[in-house]
Amino acid sequence: MSESNQLKILVVDDEENMRFFLKEALASQGYEVHLACDGEMAISMIGKDAYACVLMDVRMPKTDGLQVLDHILSNHPEVPVIMMTAYGSKEIAMEAIRMGAYDYFTKPFDINEMRIVVKRAVEKQKLEDEIKELRSELGSRFSFDGIIGQSHEMKKVFELIAKIMKTDVTVIVYGESGTGKELVSNLIHHNSLRKDRPFVKINCAAIPENLLESELFGYEKGAFTGAEQRKIGKFEQAHSGTILLDEIGDMSLMTQAKVLRVIEEREFERLGGNDSIHVDIRIIAATNHDLPKAVKEKKFREDLYFRLNVMPIYLPPLRARKGDLPLLIDHFIERNNKKLDKEIRGVSRSAISALLSYDWPGNVRELENIIQRAMLLAPADMITMECLPTNISDKTISTEYDRDFFDGSLQEIVENIASGAEKQLIIDALDATDWSRTRTAELLKICRKSLHNKMKKYGLFEQNQT
Ligand SMILES: Nc1ncnc2c1ncn2[C@@H]1O[C@H](COP(=O)(O)OP(=O)(O)OP(=O)(O)O)[C@@H](O)[C@H]1O
Ligand SMILES: [Mg+2]
Image (tube, rainbow, N blue to C red; front, top):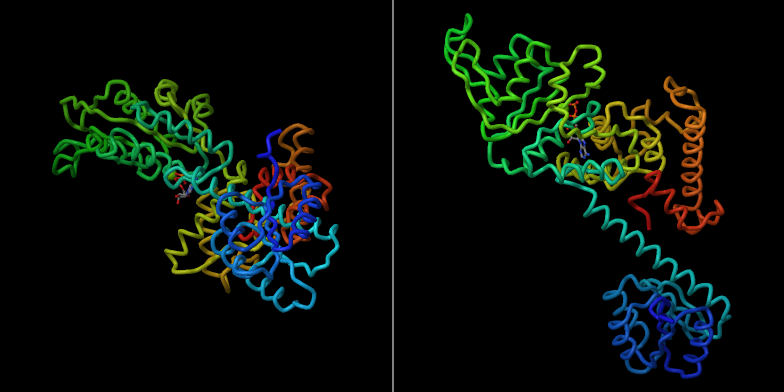
């Protein structure tokens, strides 16, 4: 049998009988028990092995228990320490607790009670390890150059971007307004082989139809009234670099035909000019339109669609990846603390629950605006329900039928309602137990692992959880 699976406990006592008594009592619970007969030995042992808990007598010759406790708290703060004191020395015990001991016992003690306290201490440490692991995972893996996301959908997006980043392939980014299309386009260019070359962006929806072509292709002097000198267009400016054709779904059919030629031949003429200009450009397009639908409706050229749709990236709406909300909220709080010179620490539980229940039609941009506004309104260092606009703070998870309610099959509708109710129940149970996962799992009669999985599914990780 491999002993490495067993949790290790260190018992420190100068009395031999006590050491052996505790060894027996705890080994029978499945722990691997190590023994130290004085403080110095304990300090040396604790540096060599990872202990799930330390049980220690206060009064020992040479280095006493409080000194060892101080050493453990400074060097191994994650290890819970339970102190044992002689009858009549309650003050020393209280001092140990003030210093940071997990608990204490006065000798003689009830061994069953001791076993329960040890078990609780060990579980607390395991939970803290889990949280630490999760936090470091969140910190290091779920952000790609400032694009935040840990959901399955966003991981798929990150993987795809990583694959195409170093190529010259044409990319089209689809997504509703505010989902991060521009952010993703920036990331692709800034990580590409063309990163030191120009990155030229043009928003096709923001420029009036008659001006768009002269912006894109430029013009020669005298091409039209008012064309007093030659103008270099965006395609030419982007030569050797990347061009972002943002909101390409809003481009007129006539301009689409000319853009198609640039994509196919990398060639065009300035307005009013005869010379063909050749450019070496990488093309990224973005749109919040459903292009296949626009093709069917004859609003978008099919040939251009096929030229662009070589490597589509679909950015999911925020409502489809609410698990990313806590991370995004943390990210925006951190960013805006610097910008607004604030020291907001987090979001209250009820406010988190309201933010999770909202549908986010304006996606990540709307979230950032709401967080920024809430930070300005926050009376202290937390964002509370009162800082949220009423259309969000009024939101609770319910089976209320909204306009999209009857989209989907009966089974899908029922699943949606069930998920909403399950999430609310878990939030209520967490609130009732002060976010203790052990007690919440007991209350809901599920195991901690399955509670953990459900919390992950619903994005219920609290930043201030202990
Ligand atoms: N995954 C994300 N992580 C961090 N910030 C994000 C993320 N997605 C979007 N944002 C932020 O949200 C805002 C909107 O993003 P962006 O402008 O890229 O969206 P868009 O899809 O181009 O929107 P629109 O269609 O309205 O132009 C920006 O401030 C951006 O930094
Ligand atoms: Mg945009």
